[in-house]
Image 1 (cartoon, rainbow, N blue to C red):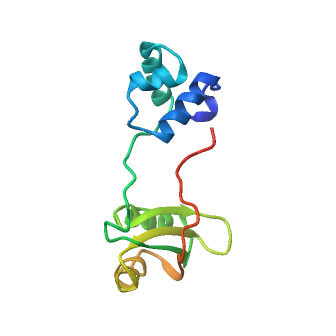
Image 2 (tube, rainbow, N blue to C red; image 1 turned 180 degrees about the horizontal axis):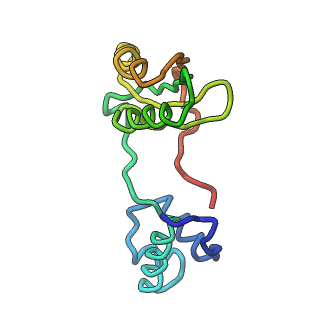
Image 3 (cartoon, rainbow, N blue to C red; image 1 turned 60 degrees about the vertical axis):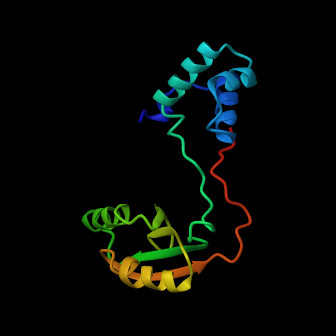
Length: 159
């Protein structure tokens, strides 16, 4: 992926394309051309360029976690026993190999990582924490936050 700080600025048509594709990633090129009022050929070239320059990372379907047995959303603070580069690399490698961990962020503050995970219920989380998260390299302490209500959940960026 290209360094975004080195890429050129976006014009109004580019931002309109990004907004439209964020709202509906399955939108046809023809429909996108109508929305941004440009020819289909010009829109296709812009989308290719926006992808090449790293503004568009990919496309995916948003799935319903409730219907797929992953209705319980849990955030976990993780404090490592040390934060030496080798320790961080080992932790990251293990996290990347675990599909039940949806997100992992190295953060500044009183703990080292914030994990986002989804499971069926508290029994499934107990299994995940005991046989998964607590066994990750260097984990000294965790704090769990079970989500009672998802007030807002979006991947849309303000463009």
